[in-house]
Length: 244
Image (cartoon, rainbow, N blue to C red; front, side, top):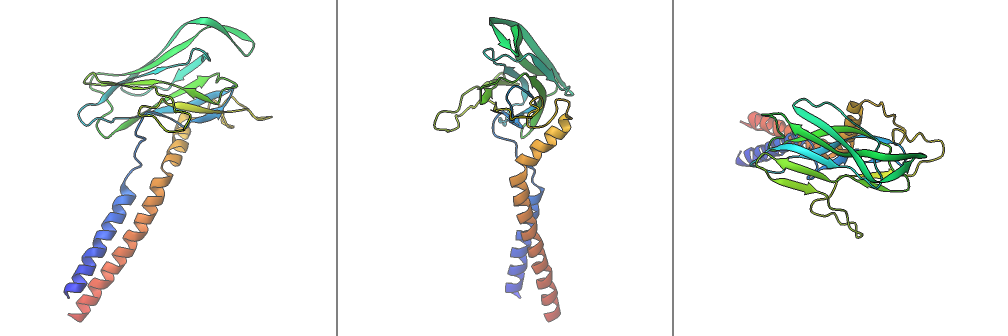
């Protein structure tokens, strides 16, 4: 009888663990990132800055993104987010730049999201800030977007480091977009066949699907283990009752 009880308890623990894995949401990236992060040169990009709160004693109340000036962006649009005020600031360029045969003398320099009083990205939480940017530079395979994350206690984390030639990720990497050359006949305006008017909710869901893939695999394995353990557990209980 004691052996049966031990087996039942063990299998029950496995079942609980399996369901716990299945019920655990995908954890946000450990640093500020762009999701999705791959687009086409010369087109537009609609994506989200994914910002996780990394402190256990303070919430995030401000996000400030610095936009490139050597390859300036002439179009910046932000999606409204309840509880947050977005501001895109334009300024004169040190040197005029030609984009699409047009001379550009001013461009967007920063995008800032500031939380309303009482609003923040709390402990163990993350938030996504959606933007639409254009025109993406040509002849460049990556566009870095240094970002400062400010906590309610005044701490500022500067996500601005570039990945080294060895490919090793630095401690505070800057969010970056990978830019692929435009293929013949491809509409670069939305990046990889999407349109600039694409619903950002769909973009978010596509991003979440990619980042959640691992979690789903683990969840499926957990469910299988849990169901197996539950089945064995119930069978063991029935057998022990019959013997009694």
